[in-house]
Amino acid sequence: MEPYRTMALNNAWANATLYAALAALPEGAFTAPRPGFFPSISKTLNHIYEVDLYYIDALEEGGLGRSVYDREDITNPHELGALQADADLRLTQYCAALAPEDLDRRVRTERGHNPDVTEKVGALLLHLFQHQVHHRGQAHVQLQDAGIAPPQLDDFHLEDGRVPSARAYFE
Image: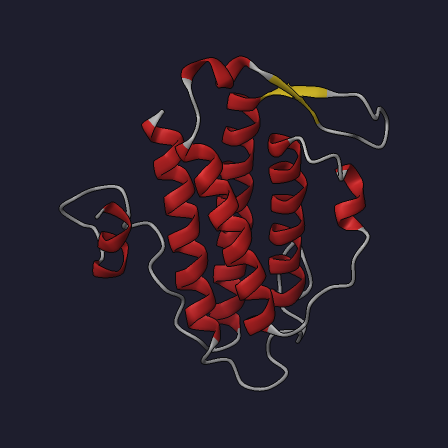
Protein backbone atom coordinates (compact mmCIF):
# COMPACT_ATOMS: atom_id res chain seq x y z
CA MET A 1 0.00 0.00 0.00
CA GLU A 2 3.07 2.20 0.32
CA PRO A 3 3.05 3.68 -3.21
CA TYR A 4 -0.43 5.14 -2.69
CA ARG A 5 0.47 6.73 0.64
CA THR A 6 3.73 8.06 -0.78
CA MET A 7 1.99 9.51 -3.83
CA ALA A 8 -0.51 11.24 -1.55
CA LEU A 9 2.38 12.67 0.49
CA ASN A 10 4.12 13.74 -2.71
CA ASN A 11 0.93 15.45 -3.82
CA ALA A 12 0.62 17.32 -0.50
CA TRP A 13 4.26 18.40 -0.61
CA ALA A 14 4.09 19.51 -4.26
CA ASN A 15 0.95 21.54 -3.62
CA ALA A 16 2.43 23.16 -0.50
CA THR A 17 5.62 23.96 -2.43
CA LEU A 18 3.70 25.45 -5.35
CA TYR A 19 1.43 27.52 -3.10
CA ALA A 20 4.49 28.81 -1.20
CA ALA A 21 5.89 30.09 -4.49
CA LEU A 22 2.61 31.93 -5.15
CA ALA A 23 3.39 34.23 -2.21
CA ALA A 24 5.78 36.11 -4.51
CA LEU A 25 3.02 36.96 -7.00
CA PRO A 26 2.16 40.64 -7.24
CA GLU A 27 -1.43 41.79 -6.73
CA GLY A 28 -3.68 40.62 -9.57
CA ALA A 29 -1.20 38.11 -11.01
CA PHE A 30 -3.06 35.08 -9.62
CA THR A 31 -6.12 35.82 -11.76
CA ALA A 32 -4.33 37.48 -14.70
CA PRO A 33 -4.55 35.79 -18.13
CA ARG A 34 -1.84 33.18 -18.69
CA PRO A 35 -1.09 30.64 -21.41
CA GLY A 36 -2.33 27.15 -20.72
CA PHE A 37 -5.33 24.87 -20.78
CA PHE A 38 -7.00 27.10 -18.16
CA PRO A 39 -6.69 30.86 -18.69
CA SER A 40 -5.07 31.77 -15.32
CA ILE A 41 -3.18 30.32 -12.40
CA SER A 42 -6.34 30.78 -10.35
CA LYS A 43 -8.49 28.80 -12.81
CA THR A 44 -5.88 26.02 -13.02
CA LEU A 45 -5.56 25.63 -9.25
CA ASN A 46 -9.31 25.87 -8.69
CA HIS A 47 -9.72 23.04 -11.20
CA ILE A 48 -7.20 20.87 -9.33
CA TYR A 49 -8.95 21.59 -6.05
CA GLU A 50 -12.49 20.86 -7.21
CA VAL A 51 -11.49 17.64 -9.01
CA ASP A 52 -9.68 16.58 -5.84
CA LEU A 53 -12.89 17.26 -3.90
CA TYR A 54 -14.89 15.22 -6.41
CA TYR A 55 -12.67 12.15 -6.26
CA ILE A 56 -11.93 12.31 -2.53
CA ASP A 57 -15.67 12.45 -1.90
CA ALA A 58 -16.14 9.42 -4.17
CA LEU A 59 -13.38 7.53 -2.33
CA GLU A 60 -14.90 8.39 1.04
CA GLU A 61 -18.37 7.62 -0.34
CA GLY A 62 -19.57 10.99 0.88
CA GLY A 63 -22.40 11.27 -1.65
CA LEU A 64 -21.68 14.83 -2.84
CA GLY A 65 -21.00 13.73 -6.42
CA ARG A 66 -20.97 16.48 -9.01
CA SER A 67 -22.35 19.02 -6.53
CA VAL A 68 -18.72 19.78 -5.56
CA TYR A 69 -18.54 21.75 -8.81
CA ASP A 70 -21.38 24.07 -7.71
CA ARG A 71 -19.07 26.65 -6.22
CA GLU A 72 -17.49 29.96 -7.07
CA ASP A 73 -13.81 30.05 -7.95
CA ILE A 74 -11.59 31.19 -5.11
CA THR A 75 -9.46 34.11 -6.23
CA ASN A 76 -7.34 34.46 -3.10
CA PRO A 77 -4.30 32.15 -3.34
CA HIS A 78 -3.89 31.94 0.45
CA GLU A 79 -7.50 30.85 0.92
CA LEU A 80 -7.33 28.34 -1.92
CA GLY A 81 -4.01 27.01 -0.63
CA ALA A 82 -5.50 26.37 2.81
CA LEU A 83 -8.46 24.53 1.30
CA GLN A 84 -6.14 22.49 -0.94
CA ALA A 85 -4.04 21.56 2.10
CA ASP A 86 -7.18 20.29 3.84
CA ALA A 87 -8.06 18.18 0.78
CA ASP A 88 -4.48 16.89 0.62
CA LEU A 89 -4.67 15.84 4.27
CA ARG A 90 -7.92 13.96 3.64
CA LEU A 91 -6.36 12.14 0.69
CA THR A 92 -3.21 11.29 2.65
CA GLN A 93 -5.26 9.94 5.55
CA TYR A 94 -7.38 7.91 3.16
CA CYS A 95 -4.32 6.38 1.49
CA ALA A 96 -2.62 5.68 4.83
CA ALA A 97 -5.64 3.61 5.87
CA LEU A 98 -5.84 1.57 2.64
CA ALA A 99 -5.73 -2.21 2.80
CA PRO A 100 -4.90 -4.37 -0.25
CA GLU A 101 -8.51 -5.50 -0.64
CA ASP A 102 -9.64 -1.85 -0.88
CA LEU A 103 -7.97 -1.39 -4.26
CA ASP A 104 -10.51 -3.56 -6.08
CA ARG A 105 -13.50 -2.08 -4.25
CA ARG A 106 -15.73 -0.07 -6.54
CA VAL A 107 -16.96 3.41 -5.65
CA ARG A 108 -19.56 5.55 -7.37
CA THR A 109 -18.24 8.36 -9.55
CA GLU A 110 -21.33 10.19 -10.71
CA ARG A 111 -20.95 11.30 -14.32
CA GLY A 112 -23.09 13.60 -16.42
CA HIS A 113 -23.92 10.79 -18.82
CA ASN A 114 -24.53 8.22 -16.06
CA PRO A 115 -25.00 8.94 -12.35
CA ASP A 116 -24.16 5.35 -11.42
CA VAL A 117 -20.69 4.87 -12.92
CA THR A 118 -18.32 3.03 -10.59
CA GLU A 119 -14.55 2.76 -10.62
CA LYS A 120 -12.07 0.63 -8.72
CA VAL A 121 -10.37 2.50 -5.88
CA GLY A 122 -6.87 1.64 -7.13
CA ALA A 123 -7.54 2.96 -10.63
CA LEU A 124 -9.29 6.04 -9.29
CA LEU A 125 -6.31 6.91 -7.08
CA LEU A 126 -3.86 6.49 -9.96
CA HIS A 127 -6.05 8.70 -12.13
CA LEU A 128 -6.28 11.34 -9.40
CA PHE A 129 -2.49 11.44 -8.90
CA GLN A 130 -1.95 11.73 -12.66
CA HIS A 131 -4.54 14.51 -12.89
CA GLN A 132 -2.81 16.47 -10.13
CA VAL A 133 0.65 16.14 -11.69
CA HIS A 134 -0.69 17.06 -15.14
CA HIS A 135 -2.37 20.29 -14.08
CA ARG A 136 0.26 21.26 -11.50
CA GLY A 137 2.72 21.19 -14.40
CA GLN A 138 0.52 23.66 -16.25
CA ALA A 139 0.40 25.93 -13.18
CA HIS A 140 4.18 25.64 -13.00
CA VAL A 141 4.49 27.12 -16.50
CA GLN A 142 1.91 29.80 -15.69
CA LEU A 143 3.92 30.78 -12.62
CA GLN A 144 7.00 31.19 -14.78
CA ASP A 145 4.94 33.30 -17.20
CA ALA A 146 4.09 35.52 -14.22
CA GLY A 147 7.81 36.14 -13.68
CA ILE A 148 8.24 33.84 -10.67
CA ALA A 149 10.85 31.09 -10.75
CA PRO A 150 8.79 27.90 -10.51
CA PRO A 151 9.82 25.57 -7.69
CA GLN A 152 11.35 22.15 -8.22
CA LEU A 153 8.47 19.69 -7.84
CA ASP A 154 9.98 16.35 -8.82
CA ASP A 155 12.65 15.74 -6.18
CA PHE A 156 10.52 13.84 -3.70
CA HIS A 157 10.83 10.08 -4.08
CA LEU A 158 14.57 9.41 -4.45
CA GLU A 159 16.59 9.61 -1.25
CA ASP A 160 19.72 11.00 -2.87
CA GLY A 161 18.04 13.88 -4.67
CA ARG A 162 15.28 14.63 -2.16
CA VAL A 163 14.95 18.32 -1.46
CA PRO A 164 15.07 19.34 2.21
CA SER A 165 11.44 20.46 2.28
CA ALA A 166 10.34 16.95 1.25
CA ARG A 167 12.39 15.15 3.91
CA ALA A 168 9.91 15.99 6.66
CA TYR A 169 7.22 13.99 4.84
CA PHE A 170 9.29 10.83 5.37
CA GLU A 171 9.98 11.28 9.08
